[in-house]
Length: 273
Image 1 (cartoon, helix red, strand yellow):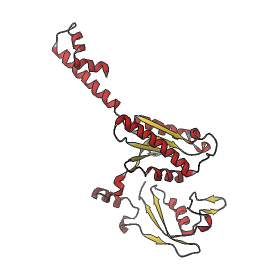
Image 2 (cartoon, rainbow, N blue to C red):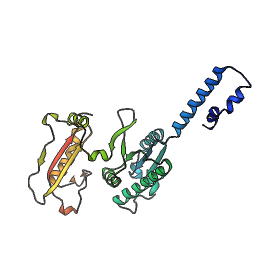
Image 3 (cartoon, rainbow, N blue to C red):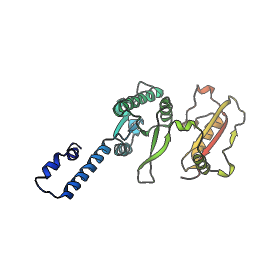
Image 4 (cartoon, rainbow, N blue to C red):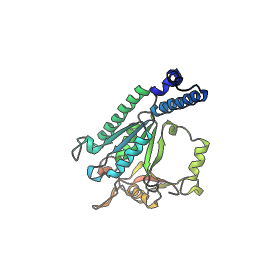
């Protein structure tokens, strides 16, 4: 950029006069140098922040997936922050609980965003490349939601597109407003049963210890309809395991003895892959 800027300033044209007097040479060199200045300026422009988060235990972390997310982030963003459990906590278990881990990761992201704000004097675009258990992802998302002006793009590692990384969902303040007509039309096309207009709330029959005030919202974005079976079982029984050897992976808030069936559940699922 520094060399190319010298051309419009007239330094290089003075040198060219010693070689040729053809006007088209000066015009061509000027145009080429101007293009280089614009390209250099575009390359220096901040392209947002990519945050690669790997919160799986060391023995469950797939290095190839983490590497793919790192490469995608570095190719798409000018700054990449890598947050890995194996790096932050060398031991098998950290001294912090799940909420503490989510809060610590969120503070790392906040610090990086503040640094980019100071450099670029603008709100950076943030994309999350996350590998985490559902519980950890939920806690982190709830923590990041405290920053109302922050807009996030959650990226997805696609298995069907040759392990390419694509945008999964955008999270921002716009979700707090009513749907635009185009968005409302799109939403009516996605549910698995559009002919019913909307998903139906299923009431759970009264049982001992039932939590009548608790409504289970089951959202299925994958193409496998069987993925809702475990969630429906937890909602209808209040049990997070079928037996000692088959845990659903879900956890209910509060003490175990206080958990019971939900009052109702609602399933929202997409109709295709």
